[in-house]
Amino acid sequence: MMVEVVVWTLAVDQKNQAPVVILKDADGDRKLPIWIGPSEANAIAFDLAGRRFPRPLTHDLLHQLLKGLGARVQRVEITELKENTFFAKIFVEHAGQILCVDSRPSDAIALALKAKARIFAAAQLFSDELDRLLAEASGREDSPEERAEELKAFIENLNPKDFGKFSF
Image (cartoon, rainbow, N blue to C red; front, top):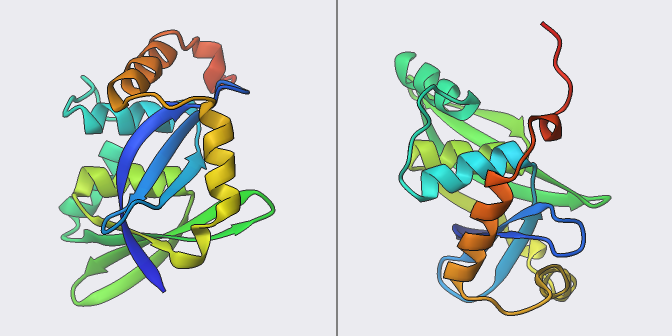
């Protein structure tokens, strides 16, 4: 069974300084933490703040390509957790057909925010173990404003080397 979720907040894992997107059950208080990369955190943070980058990021580009082809993101689903890795699917509608595409949750969430599509998570992903990990990762109960400031500081202090090596 799928549960509709919303992006509740972004936080930084206190242990390893990794960004975490926290999804919240749209009709309740259950939360689902998903550890993500810095570039996806940046894209999600900008979208949540209603800001745009001067040049399109990958998620912007994908959203514009889909729109240009007459397709739309219908919904995304966070489907499972295997060996500490979350899996997701993006459902794209085009000409009356639905295409299901495998995705990382961070990319699916970023694209859903761009496309204003609904986000769902499998009910079995909400568990006491994830609640414990969430509490452990946060290390304390911050207000949403404090978490936003912490993430902003994390993103502002990113080094280009954090994104890997690129050769041109």
